[in-house]
Length: 96
Image (cartoon, rainbow, N blue to C red; front, side, top):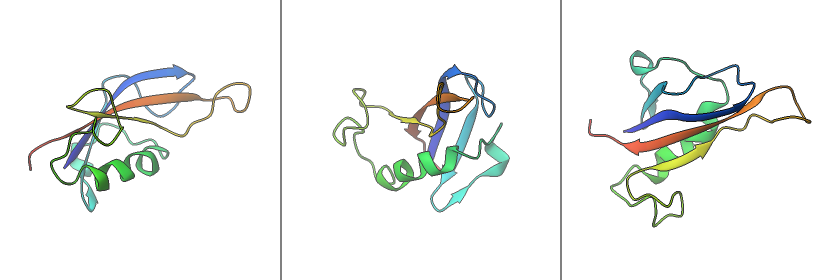
């Protein structure tokens, strides 16, 4: 399973705040474990779920400089393109 936690937001983000969590247990999103779900989050996090489904070092996969977590940037745009923001999520493996 993979837990994502919002680590940073930039600009005007309408979907998440820092510290919110989402848990994904391949192949399902655990809705009872979610504080909020931005519509952009699953598309950005799902490739990490697949890649980190096995015990692997995110640093080895070039997902991070950190061995314990990967980082995902949600696909929200920023000024001047759209009036929204960007979310950086920390993704880490958790035991089921």
